[in-house]
Length: 253
Ligand SMILES: C[S@@+](CC[C@H](N)C(=O)[O-])C[C@H]1O[C@@H](n2cnc3c(N)ncnc32)[C@H](O)[C@@H]1O
Image (cartoon, rainbow, N blue to C red; front, top):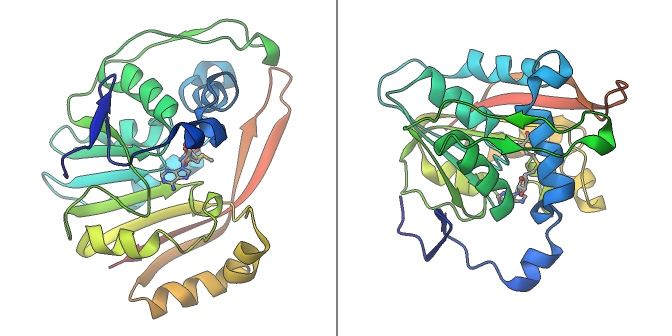
């Protein structure tokens, strides 16, 4: 992994995020987005199970076998998927990458340091839970852009990204970088609701056959896809939820 340009409270920075970018980035808002991601991904007991279990099952099904593999989850937020992979494979090296320092700090405190995480979910009716887990030694988190990852060429066996590509201005922006860092034969596992931010995103990648054609033309082999993979993101104690109609696919370099 590349040497970071700086470190802030144990989080290595591979991108010089400006104060303006911190201010503009909704994913840096602790009380809104970080708390919501933590409630979704780390507070299973509030929901009677992990709300994205079907996504996790898809990921686990498509992880390759092998010893000493290197895996990255790009856009990992609070690190649930990275933690699941690291916990199941103590001999693998797992990296969580995100552009939000606040997400990464939460992920690092929970998964790497094993801190107890107090959460204020009173506005959703869930009260004030405290979350904790057993720390994992084979997991690390770093701040970087999906379009400029801190990994050497052909150094990863698996690259996971979920609910990421439709958050980028160009949904295809990160794929060349994913291709660069995966080893030949390495797997890209993507789950996305294709909930684009821009008309250009819709035009470029919807319906998903356009996305698959683009990826095939860029040298990827599509091994599998599921459409829709329906996921429900709980919003409150009453059971209100956002429904996501995702596309899940696996591509090989
Ligand atoms: C919608 S959340 C998805 C989080 C998680 N992967 C999931 O499945 O719920 C998008 C995440 O991607 C991160 N992100 C957005 N743009 C990014 C970029 N260019 N590079 C790396 N991470 C990015 C955000 O900070 C946020 O944590």
